[in-house]
Image (tube, rainbow, N blue to C red):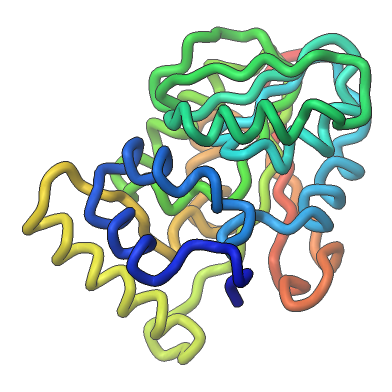
Length: 237
């Protein structure tokens, strides 16, 4: 599960005791050696679905896994936005030899208050929805809408709802319960919850914001073959 040179259990626990920004700054040098990094073949599938694009931004870009695959598709502009300066430093090194001709812009900032408005034809996000509480998900969708030009697209991967009786959900629910206790006792909080922003939930929120939602199923490799590629198109032309 973990690379031999990846973080130890102690390091992961220490990260979880810090706030989100400090925790990822500390984990950044070893993040790509953890199973938390979105697999390259998943990002590659989404990049192929969206095709070439003029201007794209990856929110919560981390160490740049998605930017690496989006760079060959970007004709004019490519931006990565993340809260952690440490993760952005790793992304900068990771992208130094990435294919493509557009120089990525790496920006530190809050995804819920992005420093851009209506500048992009594509927004992507991978492996980061757990860092937003259910109460923050409408604000996340509103931020995406703010980033996009009319007719722009929001592309991501998620799963369908898992009921309480579904045993596949039990480990994630146990983790969420432990995180709720941690955040009730310690400050600053470390927001990391599973099972959020599902196909059903994200579709409802996006459609309420005026997006048209397309679901692409059966595209991802095992063991993620049941996950769904979602492409939501903002209103306007």
